Each structure stands twice: as C-alpha cells, then as structure tokens.
Length: 53
Image (cartoon, rainbow, N blue to C red; front, side, top):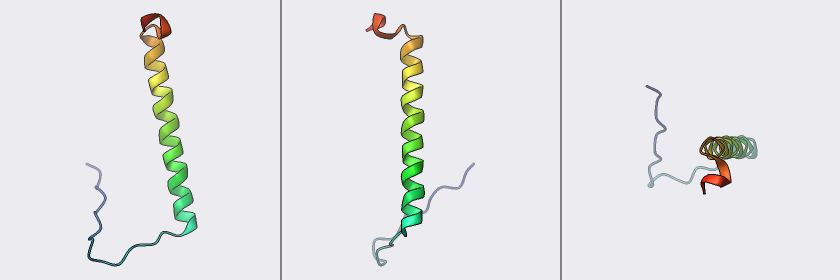
C-alpha cells in the first residue's frame, strides 16, 4: 500500500511552499483535472452521449 501524506500539526508554524513546489502542484492538479474530464467524456460517449440524456 502507498504511504499516505502526513497531516500537519496545527500548532506548528505555518509551512511556506516555494514557487517551484507550488508550480509542480499546480501542474499536478491541472493534469488530474484533464484526466478526470477525459474519463468523464469517455464514459458519457460509451453511454450513448447526448442521445442518452
């Protein structure tokens, strides 16, 4: 099983991410959104597309 992310303790000082790390995160979110949209569109088309709606 993959290791899960560790939640940050609220009592510790706020963690600041550098610009490179934020950009990597933004790209990851954009890629996940793209894949999700493609998956939804493929499922919609397999179900008959607009004709099924």
